[in-house]
Length: 330
Image (cartoon, rainbow, N blue to C red):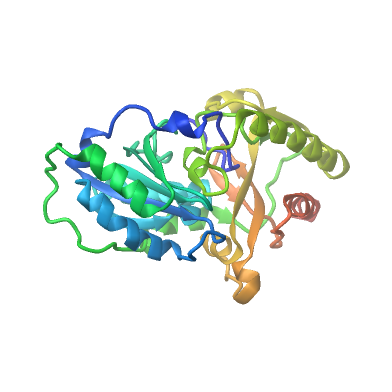
């Protein structure tokens, strides 16, 4: 089973490249979950739940059966959290994933089959429509679906926002350990780079601030990122590292003596803390979008977040603080 680096991995597709193929047949004969990402700077101001309410009528009119709405930034908080959602979708016999992305000048709706595993979607090349707002994009979708008989009956009149239960998330929370891993000096630490793999992090591409990035921008960011990370590691990490530029199985990594992975996650601070089993901060501090690093131990599938909370809005500060905390006694 291929590892899912929770670095936010970007892919070399243009917006036009998304709108390929046709609506999946399962859209007209199966349950769908809807994952929403909205730019807070868009006008008029709408929360993601208000946007979901606005989009719902169009999805139903097109023949879909949207049974639940979730915020994308919550779903992709970490590899473990995303796997929790995937298990919940399996239990609910979900067949489709609908991604709604609201940017300042455009709203996009992408539809694809549920992958049935932790990736949630099998590819970024999903069928999609775009418009200046939810009405325009929704009307386009309804027009495309016209003439296809839907077998979805008794669909919900309004959008619903279920919570993933404590039982469903308990497994991942227990795997986060507030201490440092042992034997870092014995084995290599693998460092995935943003944009380095076309097989992981697929959901993140549909975030409002990432959708549609050009290949040139991705490659430039990747090169700059590697140089900055390398500079920080040279000063603060004395052990072996290995740059990861393609997806590998756990077995392949372990064979190459890479038993640890550096993982980066980004989200609201309170959400990240809660997902890792910590008491979340409130107020403005909890609402901040921050970057947090942790280390995944492949052999035992354990996640080490370090002895102190060291997240920061600036990824360079977050990484520096995390590496300094790694030097503290286990």
